[in-house]
Length: 63
Image (cartoon, rainbow, N blue to C red; front, side):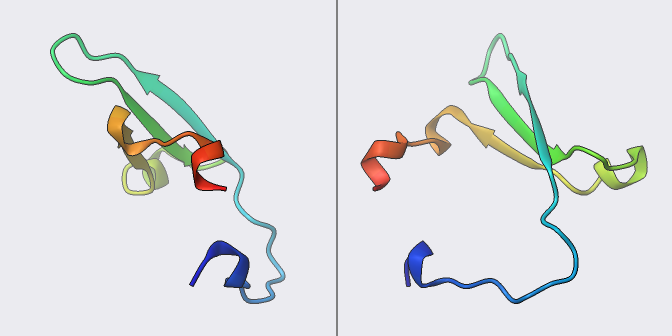
């Protein structure tokens, strides 16, 4: 299955807007934390994604 084959279910709710922050680490790779931009502090405690430098690829290489 590819992204082109995936069709998300119809929903009344719009997709969540995401925000991110780069966390610079001195003795480890930098991290990017991705989270819902309108989330409360309680929700942010459990609703986030952390990505490290080798988690990313160039967009052009995936097309």
